[in-house]
Image (cartoon, rainbow, N blue to C red; front, side, top):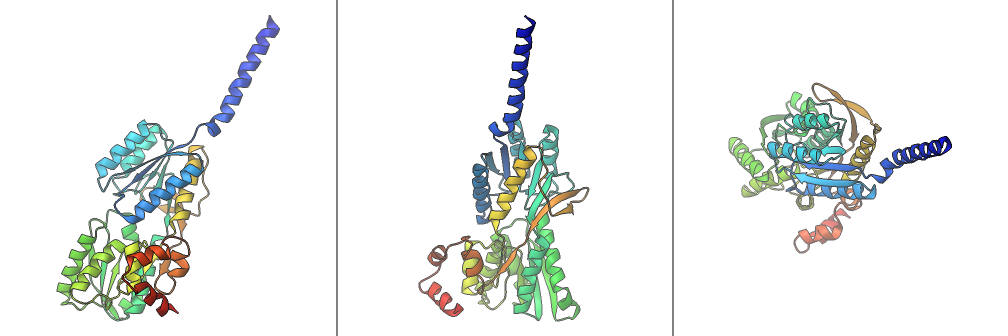
Length: 350
């Protein structure tokens, strides 16, 4: 009788050990991906890339977009946490208010990855983004090269987005020497409360009126804002004459670069960003710490970070970057141009 009991106990213990060992592999990681918005081309790309990488790794992912509503973003986070996600990847609408999402996740023991935008004053498990100060430096330095003298107008995103603050910091670092030498003046700076073309258009109309149309350059923080600025310039027949920066390599922005109405855009290869974010999410869900390149202070905490390098793109290297990487195909760009514009561009390049 004792032998049978020992055998049964041994079998039970072996079964339990096997169950514990195979559970991580058999149970897919459940990821919640919270986006600020899906209205912009940039975030539509991120969503697709993150979903694709999650599928490659066998993880389950749920994507939600708050469309700029902080209360809704917190509500969506709680829905995902109640549904049992193992990790949250968050693109915060408001850097400070998103701290409530981190607190809610902590109560459930769920790690949070701050994706592209840094969540302030919260113990996020990881911040992954591009070097946003470098983004600002690239924007300002290329515009300065095109317009080394005169009045500069800085067109920034919402101050609630920590990235917008970093872009501005980089821009001013790149312009400081020219400002000190009195070669240029930053005569006006406007913060748009959303990454919104209409807000950028209105801000640029006001700046042009203030300067009586005499603006040497516009340092716009992304392609959406650049589009609004260029619309205002076009109404005064100044488009193509006033250098304008951008960011994200959105298709309309790339088209404007080709046409010469936008000086440059900052290309951020989203594939590597999405891949590393999902890989890190799976590692965190399994209790591991992903490899990081540095640590970043977010106010009350210093958090582990992975920062990728952005690339400045103009007419000269568009083919070797955006097109070569398949971010936009030549055919896709050609369809967005008027008759003969693509041929004229490719001929001019040669």
